[in-house]
Image (cartoon, rainbow, N blue to C red):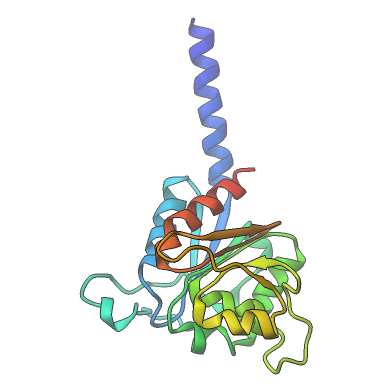
Length: 208
């Protein structure tokens, strides 16, 4: 009996050590939609993963102004230009209106996203941030889209970008229900109500 308990304990220890070895980089913009950062962040921490947060500037980064009284600003661990793809197993983008300024035209963000895809690591984007799949290294629409031909979802206001410039296969899901799409190592979530399902899928895929 003691041997059985010892084996169980060792199994749990092994699982915890494996989780602790997984490192997630979370990308956050000024004006991020708070649940799209905090819900996945909590899920990743509860799973035992190490989470690093990156923002454009090395200062407190505020959520959407409508959420300032409810959610705290994010204090980043590093800035976009300091990212080393070799340090992480996955990159996760929170959504929000700030994506249009901090993500979409930012060459450091483009470079990071392209590097994670090239290195066959998990890439996860939620809500508006999914627009990066159209614009990264393709801001003028003259380049080769990073996710061309892949299955994705995303915020309805970037659907046109994704389909026409990103040349992806867009899945709208059902209004009012969470929607997450997985295509290989690429994970996309449609909107804030999909944040928990999105986080759970990232945890599942990292655990494989």
